[in-house]
Length: 136
Image (cartoon, rainbow, N blue to C red; front, side, top):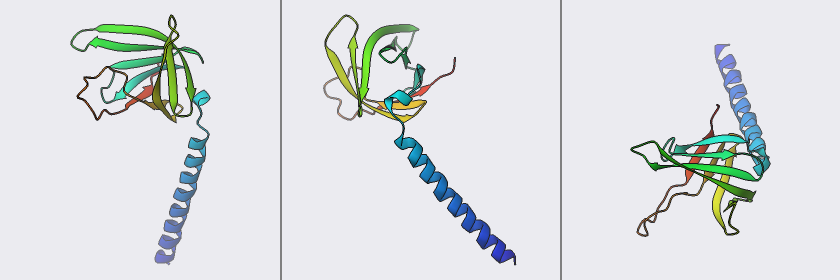
């Protein structure tokens, strides 16, 4: 009797796990650029807290970067942006030139973006940056 109960319980747990993973995939497939919540997102990886991106509205964002990690020197720059497919296109308010970066929404509160810092020419493998929404 105990064995039957164990088999039934195990089977139900496996089925429940399968259904929950299907739901997660269905939810992830509906994540679009419009799903991203407005607000402040902080860099999680590779350097936690070094960069913040504030989505002000559906057109404007502010990128805040440390200029000097040893001191509290921050640089804020406002951009116009648009997100299409796996790209985010940003341009400064005063300029018509734009840059495109790889961009992937992970969830409503987390995204991945191509490296935003200037690198020396000899650096080849650079990790993408992961950001998560912070509550203020």
